[in-house]
Length: 577
Ligand code: AMP
Image (cartoon, rainbow, N blue to C red; front, side):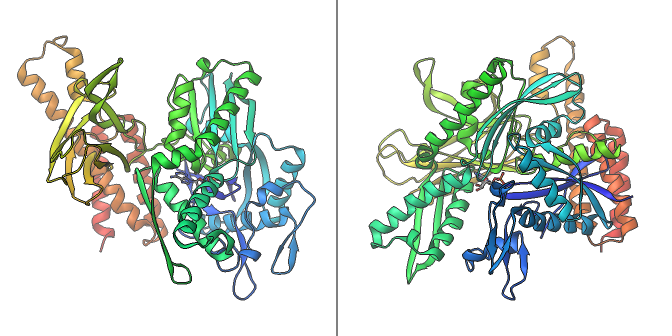
């Protein structure tokens, strides 16, 4: 039986996924789960697609095609190395590369696909997408809307009636859609967007800013040189992504033009002010969507983030100001649409599929700082850095300022919880950073929190002007799935009438549970590293055990998990060198 895949044919990037062991699995292309929707030619004039084509962009910008999705359904052509192609043909090259990667991964022919398109695509654009699939040797079993696919990824069976806002901010396009699931029918009720608004525009703003700074320093416009311009684009895009996680990003490119180097720093606050007007436009689209669908924002059950640029923290901040629920971002926003498409593909094949399982932190982690609470200045405001629901591992940073002139040290205090005042949350640990420079109040301290799969929180504080830094590891007791024993105990008070002996037994049980899950995750890492190297039968057996282990973690059946750990460990003993 040939396999059926789900494909997100995106403006900037494309992805392919398939159902394996009942769950969506994104297939890597050229070693990456995201493939640039880019077509170019190599040195011999042969067509190249994906990452190699994108890499070629700097050397051969004139024969590189990007964003072909924008032209789908139009009667037009693009030229690559003096040959012309229709948008369907270019898209077919992208689809063919995804198909080949899927075939290599699955070890069998892939002849059918479900392909996603934006909800606003008209008939001509849908038909063009279908034709591209056919050209690539794929029978397109269904064309489904991207927001519907995203909603499916979070809720595969769609048995619960709900209203979902899908906020999709990609590289070149923005869409807000209201998806309503009712009586098992999933429908896009309204969709609004801007086909020329996305992360690329943020890049343009950053490029213009860097270009201006470079011009002021050297009197040369980087934007006027095609190669320098493309290098600049790659550099600012990287900095932009970094700014989603840390408060400052450095842009450093040697010999940018002649023997001049580019070296500058951008602050997230500065960048956010550049893009705020564009993000305000996206919020206006969200409001229009509600109006069109005659649904009140308060009726939304879930907000789903889709598209790489939705990782921008300002997106979550602005959406949280107008909606009753915090946006969900635990499924990778770059992969969610392809995963949803594969769920639909699985349904067509009659496969039983379940929603995506991801390791997330169920807790928020942050620090204490001086700030305003209830209109009063307080020295104990809780400032969250890692929000609950964030996929693990994760790393987030913010900048803080010293309060006093000549302040010699800062006390970094870390808490877990949601309460606005730090002291109402669970205290995790603290440390002092001493020997700060004798500077006026406002000395910048960059605080970064990194949380790994085992719940170990690594806290780093750096005095920005000197680089003086201190890193401390803290155990949060968080395995991504365990419950908060302390809080539960406090909540229950004497309700259970436990004596000290019983409560310490409970604590021990919590610790054991934590250990079993940590061991399972360790074994999974070791097994994942082996899968590619071992023979197919062993790999299948290993995959079956891993999938069983994942299911058992979700079900919380720990004695079964302990037995599975043993079986996995035995198997790895034989397979590892
Ligand atoms: P998509 O079209 O969904 O593949 O989204 C691609 C866009 O997302 C590009 O503009 C990327 O630069 C942007 N992007 C990817 N990762 C991040 C990130 N971590 N923070 C901000 N933008 C990002």
